[in-house]
Every structure is written in structure tokens, then in C-alpha cells.
Length: 222
Image (cartoon, rainbow, N blue to C red; front, top):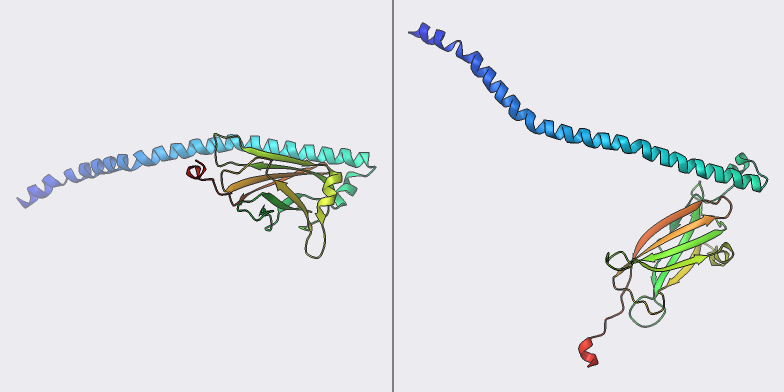
């Protein structure tokens, strides 16, 4: 009896193991396969985008180099001499930038921006150039985003420079347009600086909190 039971069970184990292995393999491989396919698709999309981005960056860099070479030729300098010159490679808005209030009443009147041109060594420099500033209200997508635009030629920008003690920056006051009252407590400033020497356009952007003027109570005006 013991031998029949043993002999009877012996052929069942391999079949059971194969069935369990096959069924567990199906369960384990279903979800990972889908995830793997998704990852493959995302990877392929990234690989397709990467060459395009690299081409765009290379084209932009080539354009900058051509402009710098052309400017160097016009100024009678070699490209190597131009590279050795000091010129800004980026601009920054200092931490002192923000809203300002000119009167005693509640509610800010505009943004006061402190703009620093910075060279390749990280030093703030006085660089000649043109400033373009755009103020935006991005809180309401249904309303026009642009609040105001300001453009200052290099001759005007020069008068904005402050270089005493620890103050090295352009100081630019951007008041709200006449009749405009901000509806949201955050205003974004987009700043671009076109360097007069190299022709490079440097940009930066920041969103600033502001204090709104109090709204009139309509019931008090009846």
C-alpha cells in the first residue's frame, strides 16, 4: 500500500510544479511587460527629442559665435581677442528687487528692479546695453497677461547704474500703467539685456509678491 501511494504520487509532482510555474510566470510577467513597453516608448521619445535639442543648441551656439566674429571684425579685433575681453554672460535680479510704494496709501505702485550683469568669472560688471522689461499677471489665464512693457536704450540704461560701496547694479523703477490696479498679489517681471559689445541677449525672470490696494465697499457708495 505504501509503495502504491508513493508510486502513485511520484508522477504528479512534476506536472503540478510545471503548472504552478507556468501560471505564476504568467501572473508575474503581465504587469512588468506593460510597464516595460511604456518605459521603452518614453525612452524612444526622449531619444528622438534629444538630437533635435542638441541641434538647436548647436545652431544657437553657432549663431552666437558668428555674431561675435562679425562684431570682432567690425571692431577690428580677432575672435581670440574678443574672447579675452570682459563682457556679461548672464543677468540676475538681486534679492532687494521687489514692489515699492510711493505714497502713504495701502497698495504698491510698481516694481523696483535691481539688475546685475555678470561675467564668466561671476563678477558684476558695468556693461553697456539695452534693457527690455515686461510685467505680467499670470494668475488669470482668461485675462491679458501683459501689464506693461518698458524699453531703455543703452544711452538711458547708463544713467540707471549704481556703483557705490556694495551697490553694483542697474536700478530700474517700473510703475503700474496709468489707471491700472493689480487684481492679484503676484506680478512676474521678465527682463532682457542686449549687450552692446557682443550683441548677446541675456534674460531672467522672477515673480514678486505685491500688496494690493483695498477694494471699495459697494454698499458704502449707495
